Length: 576
Image 1 (cartoon, helix red, strand yellow):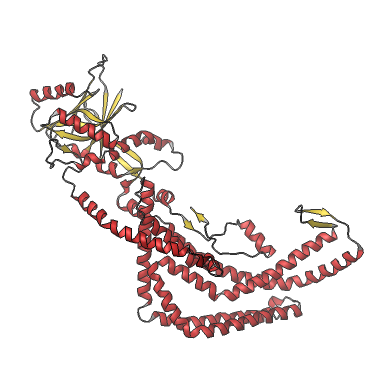
Image 2: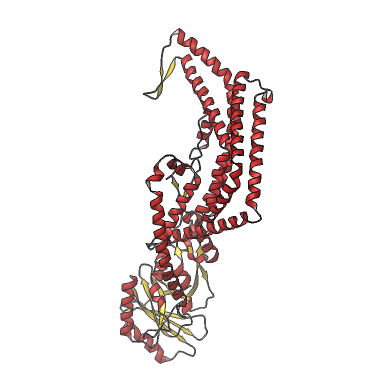
């Protein structure tokens, strides 16, 4: 049988004493947690271990003895260490001795109640106690490869990681305590850092209570009946700014909650949300400070009106081109003139509206710039809504053209079924046979001919305005893609992976150390961190996305049939 002893590297220079830890019989492994120094009273050690078992729910016991002598090992000390096995009822009893600065230790195992005196093979595994305690072992996202399985079984590693992490209370006692038991472990030099953390926790409590109270008032205001009346309910559900504000409000409620995180996943989610909010607000404040320097708001307002006029002029030139002979195509002149003048009138109305609003543009932009203090994502959502308002005439042109084109397509398809003696059964949702008289066929032929010859003119206007609308939708999609990236990116997890990669463990690897004949095999256990892709996949935050749920085939079908494509966000559709 092979016996594996996991020994903390921080205890290699500890004074002589006894080893306390957990014996895992299923794996024939012993996890050493600390060294109790001489002198000590065995009864006090047993009482301390029983209290530790009650608090941590870990079966901590005395595993054996540890001898660290700078000179030749004395016979009396050897006999004393062997006699300790009779006081503490641990089976098997492990004896580890280190002589001077020799890195090759002597290890032996005593079986007091066993008749089998066959010498067991011992593997001494060194591990970094602090890294193992602070790390979180992640289960594999996919089926592990054979090479990964050779590195260590996740279920066996989980028992070792769980033993060290659940024994956190043990590490709160150091060798400078006034108690009767002196311990050596990774934090044996003191717990000053833990005191600072506790002070920060105590100070953040009142701030979280105040923030939770303010957020509760704000959430009640958002759920009030005033926002449920039209058109406020319509604007709240359609404007991306309102959606982003509601999303960030939920994030603030999660952060300010008094409920303690139950597991590592909840803690990482809170930390990722907090860092995401912090960086979002910091970027927003930088953007706001940039906008209000050197009168950039005024320059932007002065540039906005000429740009809107230039876009309107380009649309007028485009309509004049369509009202002629575009690309040498011969259109229906009467319908072409009617549609062209109709759209030109809308552009005239839009230019009048822009010039009517021009005195207030700078003031509106000045107040919009202040919203950047709420975060860069809020400023980007406002930019998307402003873009939607400035291109509202293009959206109207697209809707007019799409409705007219869709009407003709469905009219032609219905009349085509008339020629074949078919009709659409609305109740059964299928095509049935039907007999038509001569008058119906004559009128159907006339209507089919009229719609067919008017279709190219309508299709050309529909094609042009659909391309313009798709251009606007692509720009809005890029803005929302950036917003979703900031909202969903687990920044805290990525920073943790960059600075302290051992905190996010995917597994372990063992490195063989220098060996000597007659000494146990020495291994060094090192933590394999999660890859950056796995970190993003594991801790990615849910977002309210505006991506179309239709496939490319369905999207092309809608464009061909003239069905409207709504890029609006739908409230409550949360995507992970």
